[in-house]
Each structure stands twice: as structure tokens, then as C-alpha cells.
Length: 248
Length: 231
Image 1 (cartoon, rainbow over the protein chains, first blue to last red):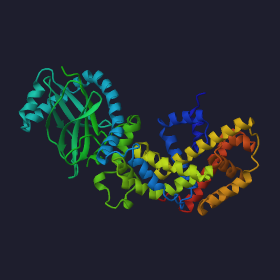
Image 2: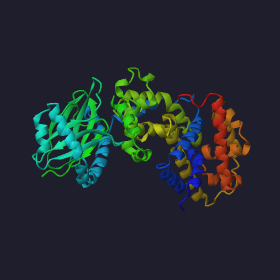
Image 3: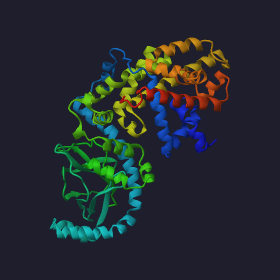
Image 4: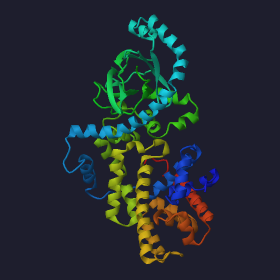
């Protein structure tokens, strides 16, 4: 039975006690994804129930050592520290890339519309490239036949950079509103190629225009912030991304 | 900074658009907005819980150790309060922190404190075990309980002793029918529907009593300066 908003709201307090039958708990969980009022009310109840645990209680002796042993040994044979870190970081990261791959397919479908809408922006970029005496290659790329311009957007829709992709595979990243990072960090550009992240370049803390290559099989561009010097595998969440049209 | 820029970007778009950015993307953005690793104190004991979770996302074991130091006691206590089984409570606490290590993105700061998140994990796992045990016992006994359990009063006293003084006061201040509903549901692991059967009351009445009890406790703890503290 589908419950109304008020009926679902009446379940919030019991939910904070984990006292809902499974079917109602599932319905409420779906509702919470789209109802901020109920989320807020639930947080209030859960804050209160969190007080039901003794704040002065101590964990059993030796438990921390057991946890360390679990997280430092992926299997019966300890994995080398350096390899372990790469593998684990990837395991979290791959979820994001899998989502990106799904999103990239949809992005390509709507790209034709997006490119049309970008024409005004392209003109602006072209002017900017000329006016600021940026590398003439960018201006050439913008006037070359068959080029594409895609926007790298944050998860919340913010436009932070454009990528100009030429039919020959040369591509240029033009930051539009990238904020500078601290001295210990750098932006890094990645491509999703056949489901795997491939580094396209370490851009520095305050990137200017960058040249990179787009190969067949690349379906998305991703931007991350990484430790200075860059990394072999992305370790931070994707800050912005764009779908890549099929390269001829 | 980039982080500040993300905040501005989010404010500039419609609330509906924000709610679409849920799960990994939205949560990741939330964590990024809330804390910048460049701003992390050298001494992790001074870092906020959200900063620690972000550091755990970068496989910082010291950050996990600090979260363990802050929250493991209550996480263990709540499982033990429900199960009255130190071995099982230990396993659940172990799983809570291993889970945080591998899936820190499951914690969403917008859906409550890290303490509440970890306690909810521990409590729900304990409840799952308790219910599974009950189902097994029911199958073995081939009978369904239809009245209050005879050991309830004794359990009630044990539960009281397990509560911190401040909370015991808040719980004792509840009307008895509200207190019994909370104890049976939270510590007894009964759904509100089962609680209604045990108390011989309509389901809607029990739901209302639970809500009313939490509101009273909230007010009581807030007046005592307990709620709102950085736990």
C-alpha cells in the first residue's frame, strides 16, 4: 500500500528507533530522498536517540587492534602497503567512474543540443583567445571543421571549464571559473576510457589552457584535485566532468 | 577557494536541482564543501568529524583512529544494551568502523552527526540480530507471543542502569506509557506494531507515544544543555 506524506511523516519517530516493519522502512527511505522536511525532522529524532547510548562507555580492550588488522590485510597474505593503497583507492573510485560511464552515454545523446547552445560561448572563447593572445592553436581549433566544445560541469551544474576537441584528436582545456588550489595540490585531468580512468595531464594549482589528446574509446572527461605532482590513479572525487562525443 | 566556489554555485541553482545531486555525487560534493584537506589541523584531535571522514576517504588511518577514540564506546554500548552480548556487540562495533573505512561516502553530514550515523549502524545491526534470534526462537517454540513478556520488568531495570545519569533523568521523566513504548522499541528491538501488541494498545497510539516521548526527551536534554553539544 502506498502511504501518503502525512502517513510517512507519522513514521519518522519510530524510524529513529529502527522500529519500522521492513515494508514501511523501505517506503520511508524512498520518500526521504525527495522530502527535505521529513529529512530534517528525522535528523532531530535521531539526534535524540543517539543520546540513548552511554557517552562515557568504553570500547572493549584490543578492539582497535582487531580493526587495524582487518583493514591492513586484504587477504591471508598481507598486500604490500603501496599496492594496497592503490587497490583500495580504486575500489572506491571505480564506483564514481561507473556512474560517470552511465552518465556519459546520456551526455552524448544531448550533446548535439548542447553544442548548438554553446555557439555563443564558442564565439566568446574565440574572442578571448584572440584578445588575450592565447596560443593560436586554440583559435585554430575553434575554427576547424568538425570540432566540438564540451562543458566540464560540477555535480551541482557549475560550469568550470570548456574542452575543445578537434577531429584530429588534439584537444584543449580552457578553464572558465576554476579557483586556485593550495600550494600542495594540483588539478588533474582524466579520461574515462573503456571504463577505466586514464590520466590526461597534471594541470597545476591554477591551470591555464592545456593541450591533451583524445583517443577513440574515451567517453568522458573528469577533473580532480590531487596532491602536488599528480597521482597514477585518481584519489579524490570528481569535481567536474563532461561527456565526450564519438571521435571520428 | 574551489570549495567556496562550489557553495556559491549551489546557492545559485534551484533547490530541486540540488536534491537531484544525491548519492555519491551529492555526498562527495557535500564533503568537499564542508572541509578542505589543506585546512586540516596537524593534530587530528582538533579536526571536526567531517574533516576526519574526508581524511578517511584518503585512507588516513590516524583519522579513523581518532573517530574510533571519540565514538567507539557509545557504538559498542548501544549494541550491548540491545543484545546483552559482549561478543556480538564487539563484532558490530568492529564492523561499524571497518565499514566507515571502506565506505566513508555513506556518511552524509546533512543527515546528522557522525555519532548518530555510527550509532544508527550499531543499533540497526543489533536489532537485526535480535529479530533474527526471535524468529528462530518462534519457529522452535511454534508459538507467537501475544502479551507482555514476563521478564519485561527485570529488563526494564537493567536498561535503566545502562543509561547515563542525564539520560536516565530524561527517560524517567516520561509518562510511563511513553517510557515503556521507547524501551520496548529501542532496547527491546520490537517494531512499533509489535510494541502495540505487547502493550495492548492501537498502533497509532504507540506511534504517537514514541513521537511524543522523543519530543519530551529532546526538550529535557536541551534544557540540561546536553543536546547541541558537539558529540
